[in-house]
Image (cartoon, rainbow, N blue to C red; front, side, top):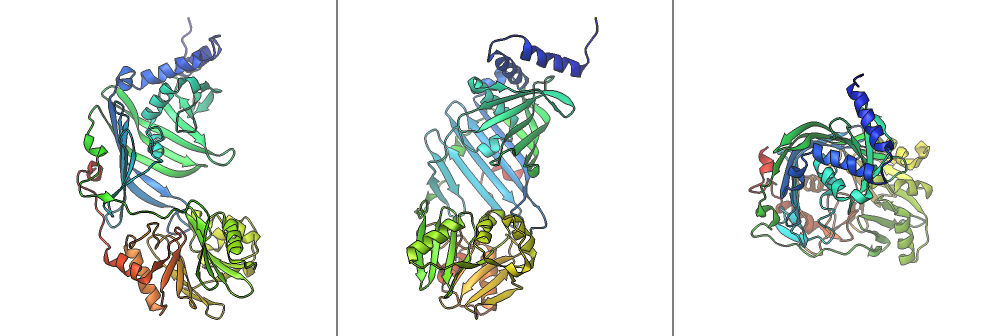
Length: 485
C-alpha cells in the first residue's frame, strides 16, 4: 500500500468531504466540527468567559503626519467576553508616553456604554449591541471566529479549494449576526484558520487577516499574531496576544466612580445650514461641514469631506444666492478630508494648498489638474485683497494644517483640531491648540470665532483659551492591566 505525503493527505481529505455525496450542509458541518476540535472542542465551547489581551502596531495610512510616509502607532488592548451573561468590554491605550489616546466601551447585557476618561463622563450608546460589539477587534482573533461560525452553521457554505502558503486549503464562508460575510481559509492538516477575508466597500477589493504563531491556553488554541491588510496595504499588526479563560471580573462592566453623565450633544444627522455673518455660511451633517464665503462674484470654501456638492447646494438654497464655487481651501492631506475634492474639481475650483499636498490632490481628484488650478501657501497666504488669510500650522496631526481666516468677520475655519459636538462648554485641550493659538497671534490675526469641519457649533476665542487652560496630561486609568504590558 502506497503512503500519502502530508500535502496529498490534505487534498484527499478535502476531496472526501467535497465529493463523497453527502447531503447539502453535511460537508460544512464536518469541516466546522474539525475546526472546533482543532481549537479545543468542548473546552472552547464550554468556556464561560474569554479575555484576550494584545499589543500591536497600527499603520496610519491616509492619516499620517505627511503624505509621503506611513506612520506607525503602537497600542495595547483587551477584549472581555462573558458568555453566561451576554456581556462584553473593550479597552485600548494607543500612542506614546507623550500623547496617549484611551478608548473604553462595554455592553452590560442590556445597554452599551462609552467611557470618556478625559471628561470623566459616561454616555449610553444605543448602537452598541452584544452581537456587533468591538467587531473590529473580533475580526483579528481566530478563536472568536471559530465560535462565530459554530453558531452560524446554517449560513456556512464551502467554496472552491485554494492554494495558500504552498498548501491546499479549505474555504468556507458564513454570515454571523451583526457581521458581513466572512470567508475562512482552513489548514486541512491542523484544522486551524490561516486567513480570513471580508469584502471592502469597492467591488473586487478585500480586507485580509492572516494568522500565525499559534499558542495554547488550557487546551484552547489561538493565533498570537495577526496581520491585517486592506486592498493589499497594511492596516495593523498584532505583535503579541494572550488568552485567559474563565476568569471574569465584574469591574470591567461598571462605570468608574465619580464619573458623571456626558454633556448633551448637537444632533447633526440632517443637513444643517447656518448663517454665521453677512455672506458667511456653515453647512453640513454628520462629520462633514464646510464654510462658504461670498466674495462678490463667487464663493470660496474650506472643508472638503465627501458630499461637498450637497453642502454647496443646500447653502445656495438656504441663502438664495446662486454663485459658483471658485476656490477651495484644502485643510490637510488626510484621506477623510479629501474625499470631496473630486466633487470640487468637477465644479471647476482652484485649490488653495501647500506644495507638499499638490500630488495628493491630483490623486484624489483623478484629474490631470494643471498648475494653474493651484494657489500655494508658504507659511501664510493672503488672497482676495487680504479678505482671506490662510495660515499653515504644523501639529502632531499633520505637518501642514491650513486654517482659513476671514478678516472682515474675524471667523477662522479649522479641520481636526478645534471643534465640539457638545451643546455647551469648552472642548478638550491638547498641546496642538496652544501651537495654533500662538501661530495666529504671531501673524496678528484677531479671531473672534472658530468654525470647524466636524461640528455645526461655532466656538469662541474664549473657548480656545479655556480649552488650553484646562489641558491635562492623559494617563492610563487605575486598574488597566494592558498599560503594564
